[in-house]
Length: 102
Image 1 (tube, rainbow, N blue to C red):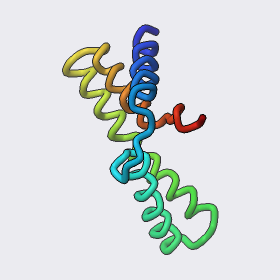
Image 2: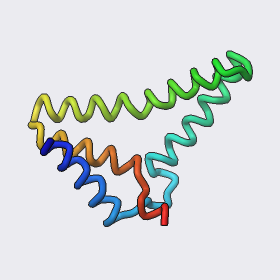
Image 3: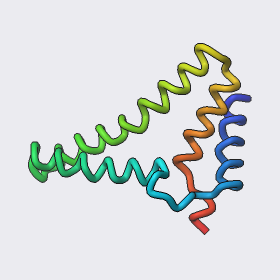
């Protein structure tokens, strides 16, 4: 439970401090461009049906989830759980934009 609180504190703290930077290199912008390219490839290979959309969605989600999972797991395995929760908080920060919602 303490790890979850730390993760949320890091994510919300970074969001309050930095907000959602307007940059082409922001992880959300990078993932958006990647998802657009994946969609084009999936639609060429699978047509315009729901299967192409599902395949594209799965690939795009995995492109974001796998690096996050692996980095948190490695930090937890080789260093410690508290630092892993902080790393997870940074990944969560990349996924939220509370200041941008105002």
